Image 1 (cartoon, helix red, strand yellow):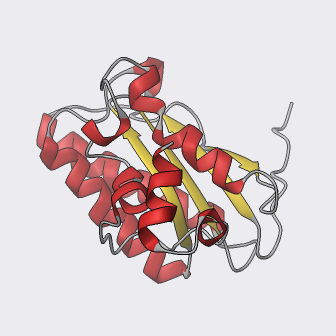
Image 2: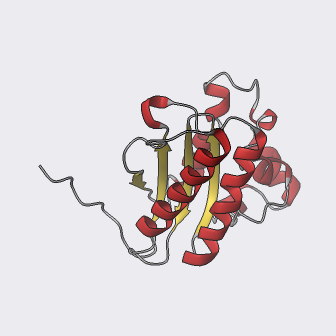
Amino acid sequence: MPRSARLVIDGGTYHVMSRGNNSQLVFHADADYQRYLQLLLEELRTHHLKLYHFALMPNHIHLILEIPRADALSPAMKHLNLMYALYHHRRHHSCGHLWQGRFRSLLIDRESYLLECGRYVELNPVRAGLAKEPAASPWTSYSVYADGADNPLISPNPLYDALGATARERQARYRE
């Protein structure tokens, strides 16, 4: 039975997830997380994607991406996951499937769910017991919104400005 086609639209925003095969670790050290983010930045630039939020977990990833064209998401994710798998195999002397199947993507209603989905993604390390608070996890976009940190990967969430009149007010409200 063939797999079903993805629902992908021009200008859509998606919650994208990839999981390690059999829930195996895909990140073992800081260098692995850093390499994934470097590869992600290349794909963002190549395919003109906007990344609003992310969380890299030891055995999976969450990205919230806006795509300019429907035909941008699959090639970007395929190349990103392939290049990271090749890096992982060289660095960790492994072979075989790194990722469990193809990536998953869920269309996000930007007007009602984008900011809430971003919070959900950034709280993953806390829910998984990897951090006591979201600020303690370095592999998320949380510090961009909660502390005003600069990150070249992140395009500001368009709903974030509605949280307050000043940067300090928006950051405080986001942390709440």
